[in-house]
Amino acid sequence: MKVYSAISNIARDLAVTGIKKEGKNAQQGFRFRGIDQVYTALAPVLAKHGLVILPRIVERMVTERVSTK
Picture 1: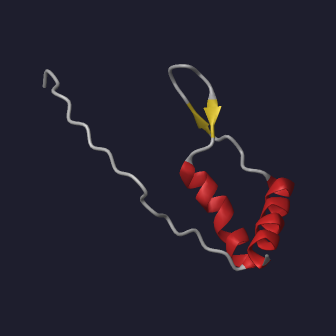
Picture 2: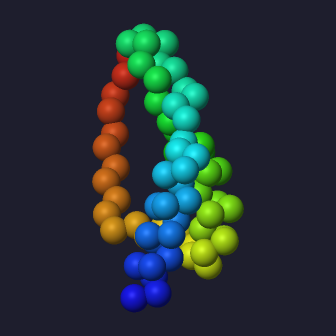
């Protein structure tokens, strides 16, 4: 239950500041937030509440394609 409480606290902290959409797609012109921005915003809040993100690979797919080059 402590994990859920920490997650709730992190969500509350991030809701105050948010994560700006600083990236821009040149072709379609839409703005986005990249994964680096998300991790940068999350890192201090996760540390404050004693949580870590542990990536785990659950599936791996490899596709080879032939190109003209």
